Image (cartoon, rainbow, N blue to C red; front, side):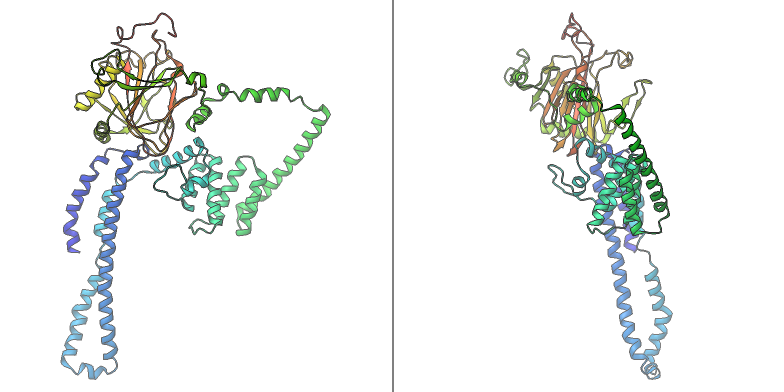
Length: 548
């Protein structure tokens, strides 16, 4: 115990040093890069817990040895008490044991070996994720489920593409997801995850969650989606497990009443339709045919389709006009002897990828500089202009200036040499790391006409172009997609993509509306450079037509 008290201050100093970088951060779920720190925090906590267990085991072993010794002694002594105490040494030792040794034993039993562990836990708890983090991570799983059309069992069993560390979900995990969806009145996902929890319980998984509780949520979620007959089935099953469940009894009566009303309404509707005759279905067929067109699909659906690799609109003829080449930007001195590898990704808008354009060493340096500064990424409120977080942008970002490190300056010079655009008026290099299910839903990089003050404080005009480095490979998901044109660009470490947001006339190119798909498996790091209009007057002269 003395050792624990002496070592604790040193341990505290070490822990505080390790966790100092976490003290200013929150929203852990928005950055996988920062979540890795939590693994080391948990590892330290487990080490402390094991130390506590060893101390408790040592104390119990000492108590056990004492008990065993006295058990043997008292068994012998009570056979002939007077004869035993007739020996003066035995009499002395009895006095000593009862006056001193039992007191020592009492102190041993009452000694608190939890001090070290509890102190460690208290120190670390202030750096733990919050309820918001847990809810954010749960909602990310639901988002991934929808975007990539994954059933609950696939996620629960951990059968995701390319996973190295497979992890299965327990009944409690599934139940927790269902409850979080329920609290948001998201009854669709409540049903999916309560049904998965029930499935695992039916398969014999042991859990502190009982079937009655799961069935109660499940039946209500199904009812809220209008499927009263199925809701009744699950409620009746609940009553077979708990016949005295008052809410279920009331629900059965209510569901039966509603079903009877539906049957009567259906009969009335059938009679009415019989009188009017059969409807002409030609208009419905026409509408159905129109919906098959990619351009008629709502943006959200197009975005999700592209994230899954579906709905790409590149025809073979257009594909044949895309090339890869060695690029030296009109014999730029930097590239005469070592031209860069350039690859066409899309034709309209023109999106080009540069391969092997940033080295692994440069990537690690950029990540090293950015990681301590990562903060929850924000968006500009289109009404107020105030920067704020948003549920549709799940990532953390940091800004790096060229004077901070020669690597950043070298990267900026390289972008200028390749694009031929002025970097002095560009925004600083933004580094982003995406979190659990990290994404950025469809958006424009440039300011539209209804946002005249979008970049007024910068005084450098609109964002003329975007340069985007991919600083990691992503096992599954994480594509950059352009829903309006059906384009998808997949992350590849060491490459960068480039496109113009504005036409040469200065008008915005609305086909550049793009999004970052949710990361299904892996860790996505990117960095981007937003290049502005000022300083490009002679480098990219204004065009005569709006769309030139």
